[in-house]
Length: 175
Image (cartoon, rainbow, N blue to C red; front, side, top):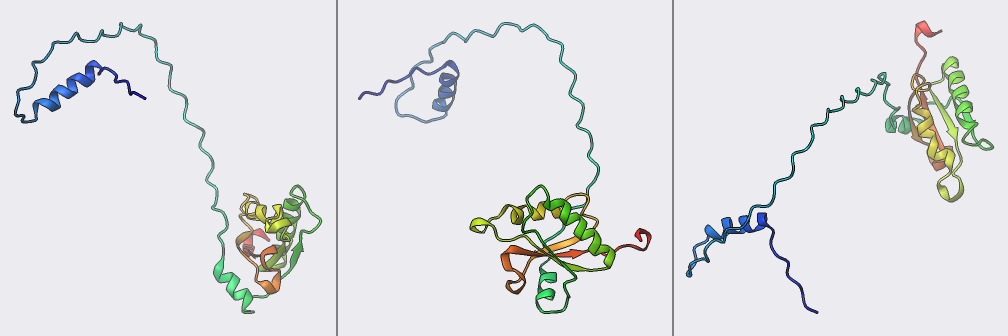
């Protein structure tokens, strides 16, 4: 199989001459062959530039998602924090679960509970949809004022199929 060589373009030949002229050789380099310059592109018609698109609308500043709370998880496991209530999501689907979680957390906050447990179940193969979606639901704008953080539950409280949720206290003005 033979390799075919391609001819150098005008730009490549100019570049090669510049590099070759900087090298010291024993034999003189061949004389430069004047090459015709490539044709210049035809003048383009001036087209009125479209106005720049308007900047995207500014989104209102949203509080960050609740953090994964490792220290709270340790305190619950050691018995330093009591679990105020629990919500079992077995029998719910991803359409009904967010509303049930919001109702449960609002009620827990009104009762003054600081730590609750939400049981999602493990799901088939360990990756159930409720288990995967719970962090998204907890970080939704309407629950950010309620949820202070969350952590996976200890084995004694349901293990990978449950989460501790740390509820923020109500302020005096919110009673």
